[in-house]
Length: 366
Image 1 (spheres, rainbow, N blue to C red):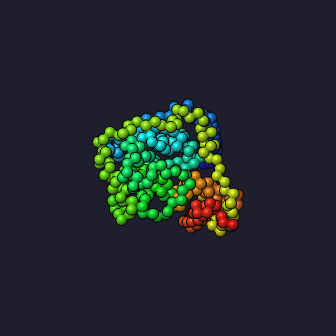
Image 2: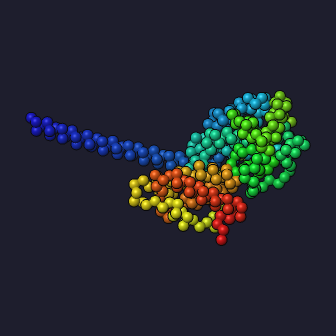
Image 3: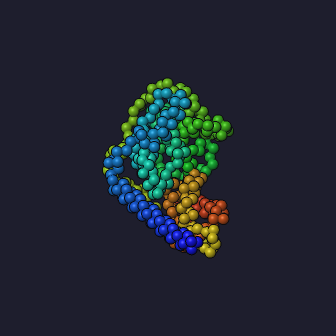
């Protein structure tokens, strides 16, 4: 009897093993099918003209941010200023038009995931930073402040040429700091928009943070002009958008193909430096490919470099991608027990390259 029981248990064990194996195969098959389905959905999305997506702010993940902006404006007693927001290809406010353009991919969870893969998706905090900044432009245009002598005296001539490649004075106390890259120094219109954004941001503590700064005069102007115009109808109530999402004929794939065009990196010589930074032995259990390590930390590194150097973010991101790619080609490894060391070294290294480009127009001096 005892032997029969053993045989019975053995048979049950085989049966359980087969069931587990069948279950695992079914799960794998299901995962493969889900993967194929996701790939097909992404392929369909990439081939779809953006205008055919019928994207709207209302009811989308974006609505809560726009509603929050309007609530902040009301909290500041700007009761007659309610700028229209619309979906377009990038953040912006057409010159002279009191409207706010928001990237279309933020209105869709699927597009946001694609944006995160292709670029660096804005965090919730960054979305609000951009909204407040663009609201500053819209406020300027709605009340035509840039035409007044006081505005010109504080911020400069609105007619000054607008240059994408500008060279800021790092750590200047004549300007507030809100967006990356000393952005307030780019143009008088940007200076005002950044001042507005700092003033509007809840709990920014601007009265304390900017005490003794030259920028304080601009913030006090903003605070006073808001009180004066809080109940005043805008001189220009409605603005005209530039390109709306309903007019964008390009497919999603074509949009990303254009936005990811390579910025030349012809003067980079990374090999020796990268080998010094990522010198971990691949035999250690705590290592991972340096390319993977860099990719996981890319957004943080790019954000900080763009913020502190003033180099345009697309260029910094392209530099980071070039470093990642070369680290992969060299088959370098990062030791996860030395994460802080690796991250510090690569950030300082990339910052030096970016600062060199800012000052000399090239990454490597020869």
